[in-house]
Length: 395
Image (tube, rainbow, N blue to C red; front, side):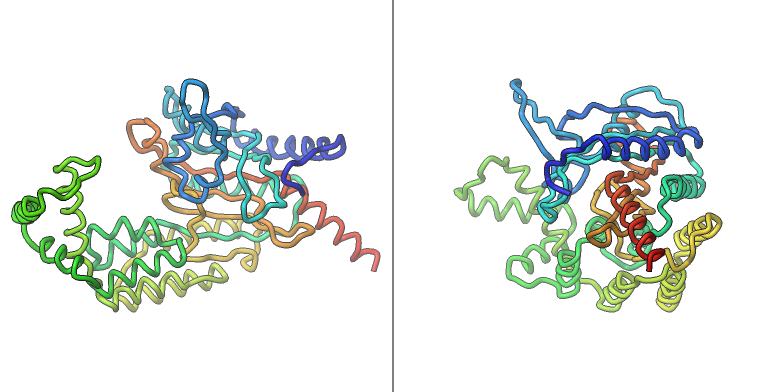
């Protein structure tokens, strides 16, 4: 592949034939096709997708000064339309269209590519929704003839339940949940929590944070009066006080029991065959006196659904740290992998994003789960498997 692909008649016919088969699977499950505009308001992506997608989004400014972008995915614009309308739930929507992303780490990969996928919105039975979308993903790959693939699964809700069950300072819980999949950054955050205040400034803020809210405010305002001539920049005095109070509260809570940190680290290290890994998580949490029955049972139900589809246990792996690179995911996540001529390649991915529609204006939380298939990667994997089969037959 090249960064600026040019498709000839044969490639177009292959992609169109594959798309017809995939969309046929979607339609058979009751999904109606929709198509959002390629050009979108940039803020809906930049505010919700996360740093990984933000830095890969093509942005432009129209003459009025409004910032726009080429859609880096189709999930957000579809959900934006649903949130703005009077959609009846549950809603089953499918699509097949171009998305656009910078590929700084894979310059040989195209900056535009096709995605075919589904969004299942407003189905309150989340377990049923997980099964349905997983089933559709597997059926779509099989419908086009891909036989060899693996599935990687994870669950952000599992780590969130662990943090909520541990004695973690309230103001740090959301931060730990938000960043647990960011290797390196999360370790630094955890080290900072367990090591406590490391500087005079942190110790001072910690002492202020240990006071009542009114006493803390009074102390901070008193300090500001002592340095009244210090520049404030564009912020107001009240904004500075509020920010310093937040920092003081953080610093006061800047101490986590190393035993608790060890439980977190041990859980995040669990990965491997899904059945074995889930059993390991049960053993780890049980020995720590933590009950995570609900998320673990949900994961076991997903494994059972895959087994019912004929997916072998050896095809399914689990990683406790797996969170994908979109910040809007809230729970179950998964990716499907195969091999093309260059090696392992992710051909599909998705998961649960139960808070996205509310942030886009729905007015209330709406359960949501979806999957997107990278159709050109899928075609390349099919061709590689076909070539391999022919070589084996000839030998």
